[in-house]
Amino acid sequence: MGYFLILDVGTSNVEALAFSGRRLLGSAEEKQTVLRPQPGWVELDPMQLMRAVYRAVDKVVGALGRPEGVGITSQRSCTVVWYKETGEPLYNTITWQDARTAELVKFYSRKGVLKLGRVLGKVDNIFSKLAGSPKSVMLGGGLAALAYAYPSTLHSSMHLRWILDNVEGARTALERGAALFGTLDSWVAWNLTGEHVTDVTNASATGLL
Image (cartoon, rainbow, N blue to C red; front, side):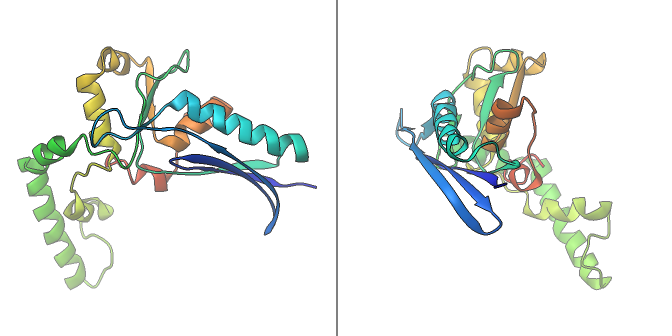
């Protein structure tokens, strides 16, 4: 029987579920360890996470055979950086719960360019409403979006900034194109397929879209 394999990659566990239409044919769950190296820091070991993914996938595929396709749902606001030649992570996954970037968030929130962008975005929203259009008057919606440009400890952009500033070799590796960055869906997809991809729902949580 054909089925689709859905990978639910959570904070403390990974679940693989096999669906044929709306019918659940089988599932497997694997636990993973949440790391808290300092107060306010919450990390995952990316390699341990992938071992959990492989174990869960192997159980389902071993019982049901090869799926027709794979879907991934995951914590969106997580950050992984890895070497594209070896697949070795440069640092642990920084999760959505992590608060180490609080000072960075304060710093970037005070940036004049962001403040100006928020003002312009709000003005554009007002003109859009006066024009009777639900979309931005200028820049096809891009300017209006700036009204909501507030950095957050959830954003991968802040995690990535921290990694660039604090992980030895990360800046050089990224600048010369030797490393890749992604959210958890990107990390899992790259390990399963070799493709460096994401989708708009995950990209929207990075603070970079």
